[in-house]
Length: 325
Image (cartoon, rainbow, N blue to C red; front, top):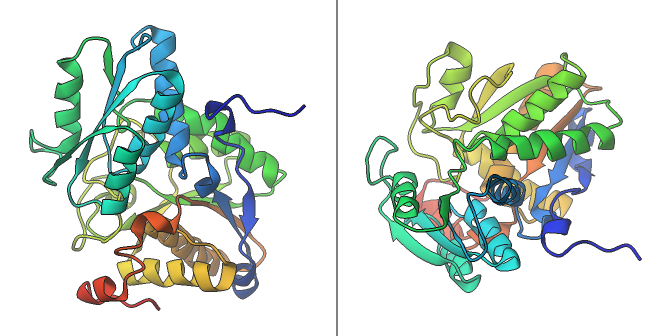
């Protein structure tokens, strides 16, 4: 029999999808790693699993313990699943600006959810800092700390990067991805650069983030107004992202991201979230720069159902000056 060991055993080994229409249009192979097919529904399942397993190995998380995290949603969802599977309590602190779908799902999964005002990281009441204080006040508890916990980056160095290398038979010219915690881009870029330094590793950034300038000038500096995207972009360089070999950055406007979200739905049959739209928009922009004949991979982060009330709501899009494309 070919069996997986529960929820944990089904994380990773996601398909690599050739985006047919976009590949024909660009003359490049545009490939999307189907991270929405992880059991918890997003790329963040990988980081959540590695963070919990690492804490167990270190003896910091013992049976019956608690996992506390500040999250825009997907890491919390992954942690809630894993806590259920391994017998832990899960406490989530989430900015109240995130979609109601994600907040409701976290509660359905059994997490204790605290919604808080969205404030900058420099503010002591930032959701991440609140989570850290809550964990410190509990016995047998960890703060997952996905932004600066290097187990996040290690998850992608040990799994996502090798999977991409194997699935492309090493014939990959570029990898492009947006980043929030930095874990996915950092882990994959490190692995791919070790295999072949010539592979271009590119950061895709929404407006309102400081990482585009970090890559292009060396100093994080916010450019443009706030983006509608959730869970990506940052005003600081996390421990996971620091030192990552990044060749360049692309800034993607919200309308570009939304246009590609709807193209993925209507032309490829893929119902995905806004971070996937940014990633694919960046992959297409990179294909135009590199020219035909190249293989470019990116991440299809999560499904669109978590954003139905916003991203797939014409009235909400119009209120932001956006259209379905």
